[in-house]
Image (cartoon, rainbow, N blue to C red; front, side):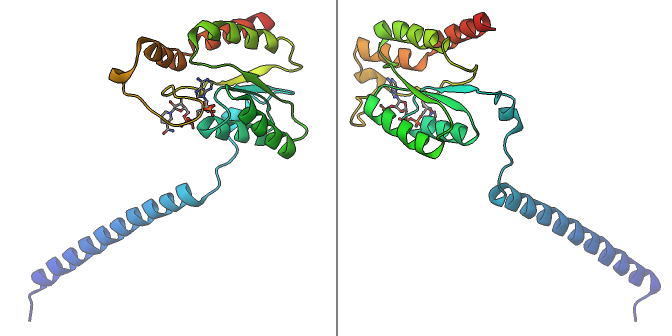
Length: 194
Ligand SMILES: NC(=O)c1ccc[n+]([C@@H]2O[C@H](COP(=O)([O-])OP(=O)(O)OC[C@H]3O[C@@H](n4cnc5c(N)ncnc54)[C@H](OP(=O)(O)O)[C@@H]3O)[C@@H](O)[C@H]2O)c1
């Protein structure tokens, strides 16, 4: 037969282990529920995006004919933005525009064509894009400056390492990834338009 002190110690140990087990179960259940919430719940419409959705607002998405830019354009159209879609391949961009216009017929969806890796021409193209914004019927409230990456031919997926690139190719790489000119001019245009 065990002594009262041994039995008390056993009870204490049992209580401590039960509390520890309950605590571990609670933490694991919380993590599991958080995992389910993160992966299964539908995200609410972004409140921060709503700040830019003024009446008749426009969003400009660069590199909008494919990949992440196309996903941005599609999402913004679904949230009610008018769009200016930028790309270099007019046929591809026109297909994207037609598809979005069919889905969102009330929105104004325009395209602008400019090769963003073409340094000599890009400056003029950007100025053309920016001045055309002055004729928009609504404010440009959002710029998704998405275009970038490794310059490659409009068709094909050939990628070159930096050591394989000519001076012109390296310069195109920098131009494509430094769309500061567009951002700066848009900021000035936005300021001038008020
Ligand atoms: N995907 C990734 O895992 C990842 C990771 C990190 C960063 N990023 C960055 O996210 C951005 C988009 O990536 P993505 O994977 O969506 O690329 P993507 O699928 O290759 O699409 C790029 C878009 O930009 C256009 N574009 C490419 N070069 C252009 C040029 N010289 N002038 C005008 N338009 C041009 C493409 O038009 P065309 O259809 O005519 O080619 C296409 O619409 C890039 O800045 C990339 O560096 C992507």
